[in-house]
Amino acid sequence: MKNVVNVSILLAMMNIAMNGCGTVAQGGMQGGSARMTTTMLEIGVNYNLKIGTDRLSTYRIVTHRDGSLTLSLESFAEYTYFALYNENGTSLKPTNVDIITGRPDAAYNPFTGIYGHSAFNSGDIQQGCLWNPTVEKFKGSFTFKLDAGTYYFRIIRSQTGLSTVNLSISLK
Image 1 (cartoon, helix red, strand yellow):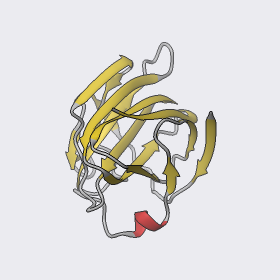
Image 2 (cartoon, helix red, strand yellow):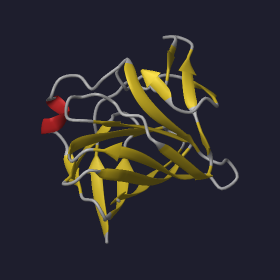
Image 3 (tube, helix red, strand yellow):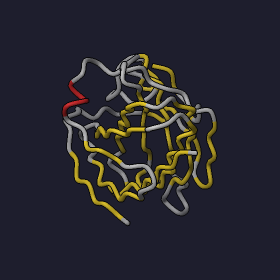
């Protein structure tokens, strides 16, 4: 089952140079505003998300039991950044990353001195996904060990490439 979600959230894009560093540590989701403007994502469903380039898109995921949550992501943008947060706004680090095509990426912005995408708060743990330029896509999965609760998935993409991000969510 495919669900189409169109989301747009404000962000001033910055010119970012790429280097291949992977996960980037940066700050926390500010305030509770994201909790009021989210779209619910269900576990066990495949999504076809349309992600804007000028805003962070925020989604809510609820787990009813402890387990390993896997986010399988296929992006057709040159780079895609995402972060997963708990209810307290703390960004989480995956326990496992499996990349099929493309590579992990961290952007360094020489103007701000910040690694990762400037749309995220300082200190957020971000997952950078750089496409394979031959096939123009990134495909991989990110697993997080979680307790039952509510989590927030925030994502943004580059201007180069398509807005489509295929996402499937599983809990084991």
